[in-house]
Image 1 (cartoon, rainbow, N blue to C red):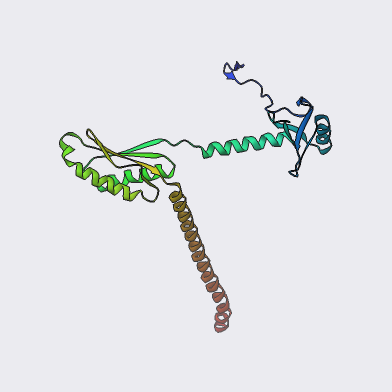
Image 2: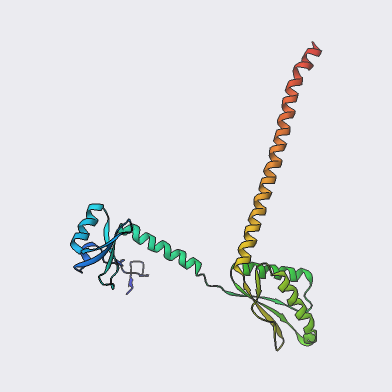
Length: 233
């Protein structure tokens, strides 16, 4: 249950332990998992003594097992690892959103490229995309142009996504759904990363060669300077 703090905002109650630890473990006998991956069934009181002597805690991780399973581990580090895994799992389970790009049968090249780029970006981020061709007024007679436009879009996004199904015409809207293809996206990102690294190396190489030439020119100038002085004397 939440409570109201001094600021007038709701606050969560103090954190409670998520596991039974050390003397809070009430079963007389437990199965103990040791840091070296070995395990042993032993009396709880003896396991607590073992934990104390090792400078760690006895943490119950499977209370419903028979006997309950406990680990010898630093409880603070144990909770940190659980929270870390939970956050990583949430990142992997990122929910995708449905994005939409809209066209008309007479959409010009500039507008098409602009919206197609948005569709590619949405797919690269893991979002599903709906592409819709809207037929206003009597433009419904140009449905063939709408299909051709969506075919061009399908070819354009092939490196990051694919159609979820065929295009459908409902009323004055022709639409198709695209879904991201993670394997292709990962391959594209690796390729782009390599290209950036190659470009950076080429720039660095060119810079090094330019500095080398400047250094050689400076050394040549210094080497020729005494000759000029001798000729003048």
